[in-house]
Image 1 (cartoon, rainbow over the protein chains, first blue to last red):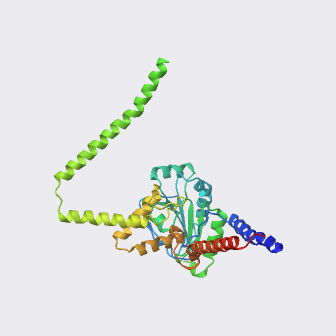
Image 2 (image 1 turned 135 degrees about the vertical axis):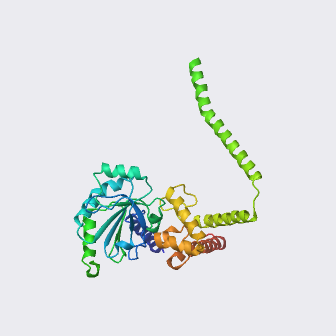
Image 3 (image 1 turned 90 degrees about the vertical axis):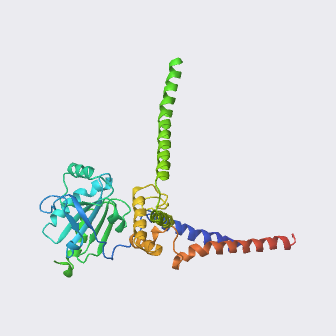
Length: 189
Length: 158
């Protein structure tokens, strides 16, 4: 009778401890996005930061996602008040330039910010090679299920979300994902 | 001592004065509004549109309390003062105005944020555990207590 009772405690405690242990290995802030694997929500927003040659688009132009079909699109949500955006800025701007002659487009999307502050930030950061659009009422952000900034979505040539990055993205991840998408034969032009 | 008291009085006046002027603003505002309301006869079309607005507002609120604010900790977009929550609430209202059903609006948010966006998980599949387990535990506990109590009361002390 006693050995039964002695077994009871570990029989209850071990699964509970195992469950907590498993919980500790998980990031409670991480929420799986339903977007990867699905067609990216369309957008048509106005450029406010033109970027630099050869990737520049004049301010006031509107960028339609539809017009980028056939190209790999890197959509990066950012804001001048966002610290993580400072970490990834150089990687994004450099990687965008590196793919300037490939069918790859980079688009910055301003999130909950004022254009003058954003333009000043770009100046402080030493420029942004690709154009940024403004999303004044956050409709695009909500369409993309945004939790915060920075977040980056990489769309394949068919306009399907291939990768979602929460938090700063590195040149290594950008290059790996973009290269793998460029390698898909149907993705080329 | 006197100077200290004077400073105290000045500080109190500085604190109270804006509150008084603000209260006055509020009073004139509401008086204005009452006067305007009385002076403006309302047509039935206007009344209809006001009624439609309040229905839309009520539907928006009813949905907004069920949707999680994406940038907050466990509160709805109805309760959150954050700008993203405000915009999400506007999206709810826009979609309802466009004739979407409550279920369609919820489905839109689930398709963007996953089921996480719903404050109450749908009672389907694995989620059923959440709804059934508490009841099972309660029944199990009651049965356990009943068994123990019966044993305590029926068995004679050795």
